Length: 304
Image (cartoon, rainbow, N blue to C red; front, side, top):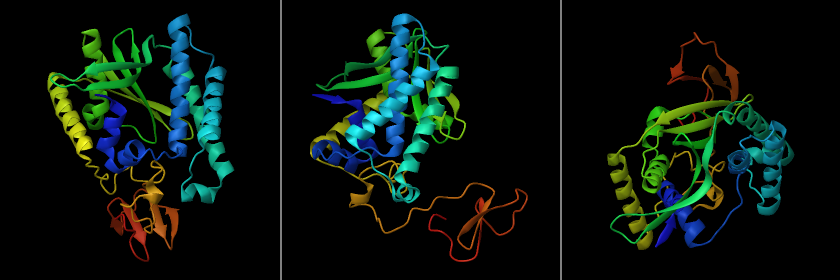
């Protein structure tokens, strides 16, 4: 039996998404966040594949242009879905904002991230056998370097904390796969978080894995495969970041979601909600606080 690790990861995150995508073949178009991420990754992969052959990075304009062309190609061929919030902003403005974001990500990738890297594996599909079973796991690693470093690139709105990187199951699998194929431990593992904001930044976090991590991973994979075979597809926990129309195309039709409940965006620090409007709050004002946020008038949002 051969199964991709992305399917295992999908099952562990949300069984209902797995059921609809893989069991029911109920595909859905990507959201803007996924569309943006795929465009960035394909552009990064194209650059490193060229660098592996020629020793040179693509010019910045070509990297940005390719990412933009991928964005346009995916949205035309596969379509895309917008959240109700994005619909209220408007399709054109939402797409333009996404393309502007991709431009910024492509520029910082070309200027700061790519130059010092000497690629070895670039989006290469690898397969390993789980010991004592007939299960083959396949996966694509974003990037490995000639210095034996594993690099996983993420586009995200905030940096990953160290504990999340240290326990991430995907990074554990990448490390296991690298060691199983090469016979050598990776020198280090890097989660390169490309932070999406007006002026993008890169926040690298480094980690490593041990034999005990691999044993835990093996047990998790075996339980996941057992659940898939038995048809056990539990939805993800309510409140999970994935359970949001911005990140899940099945959200509006999911039987485990109360679509009637509005999604409330928690205001940023130093902001105050007053009469339904968000206003700035002085950093020294600690009166009438609920947690980190101050709320005046009316009923507290359900998220508190």
